[in-house]
Image (cartoon, rainbow, N blue to C red; front, side, top):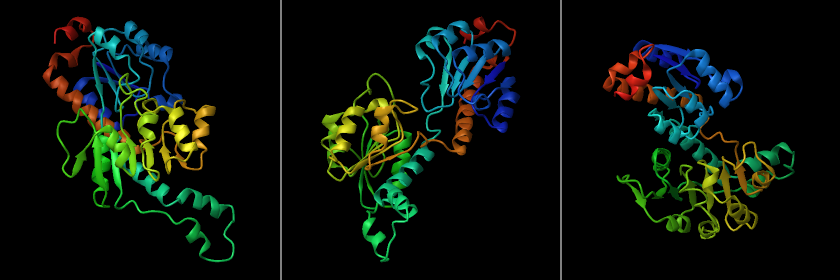
Length: 334
């Protein structure tokens, strides 16, 4: 089997796949300076005569899938395969893999770092210091930037999957009380309390969003929920911008109806004028979609995906030798 890998994939991970599954063609998008667009990806698939694809951010549209309907699988090194036309792939019988939880630890650590920074007024204190505003009196900064501790806060999660649970585990020793809303979670996490969506917003000191982007979640976080938050509460979104009504969030923050927000995702990336209105508010700590950006995340997605692929091929051994053997028929015989 010939597998085109355009995702960052470490040498050991590539070696394991090569030994087990066949030829690896490694063309990571980083060397291109950006993800491959539709035309570029189609050209690569044709050039390499690939029989399977491992991608990260590339545009795997219905047009790509129509042109290469015999791919054995499309594997996406992301928490959700949002860059792939899932419906088109399903119609062609192409197996889809993705790597949930690859960035759970990274996002959890960033959550704590940014929440502590916000509570302790670290960013404005640094700007104050850099601008040489520290005059006579050693206590001026102490009084100006006195903040709050994270310990003892009630933290509410909207969505309690791998990332929410990773945050909960890290927060317990502080200690913090963890509450969450997740109608799809069947097994409760010990020490965490499941409550309604409305209760999360009304009762928690920090509300953190961990929802996937889909038709059901689009704009689900709106003024009716945001306006119910405590006056001194903090809103955090490291998930997807589309799950929040950004006009409602902007209004709540401009009116200082809550203490502030920590935002890592935006409607437009790079931001447009409205996004920058949100970013530049003095009660917002904004970062450029980097909550999951660690070198370790790339190692995590390799481990997760290799495990999935090898398990799948162990159950379907004929698939590993597809090269030149009539892929279409072999694939649909599984």
